[in-house]
Image (cartoon, rainbow over all chains, first blue to last red; front, side, top):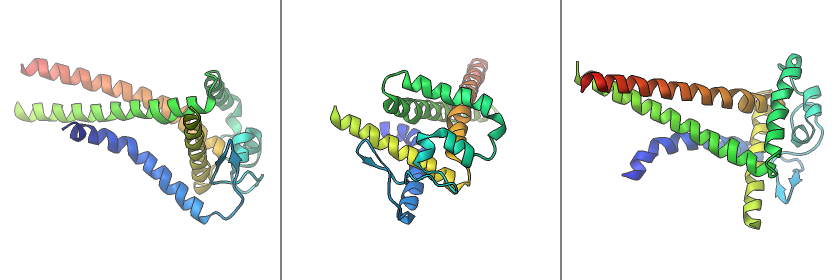
Length: 135
Length: 68
């Protein structure tokens, strides 16, 4: 019964993660280059400075990515940087940047969004049911 | 504790790899996709869903009052 109730929430929450695994594993199988290693973890992508595509260098050196890969936001750096680095500074301010990233951006906000979406859909179904009952 | 730190690093690296993979697949960039997800979609999506939730709740309450 509980599982039946939780099922829609689980589907909405898990679907993006499924897509993430699918894309990452497809990319991993086609990649034969040297991998970046950070804090004992082997990444899928390299850390070579490549002008034709993004690598871990874009994560470690935002200016490199902005100069060589950004296409659409070049004229809005002044504004976007404030928000972009504002979020990074907020997360770094917690003292555990990576854990804060996962807690807020991978768990808390997606769970909140998923609950709000499923609850809103359920309420619409209830509204439809009441309307049908009362002609 | 060490295992938790290891798991956090593993998930962080996997998620960062996803953004890099997606950026390359869409012929975009890591910076732009990060901006799209975390500076636009997350805040606006969350606010939009909160507004829709509140609106649906008030609609349902009004309807229940009218029918009871």
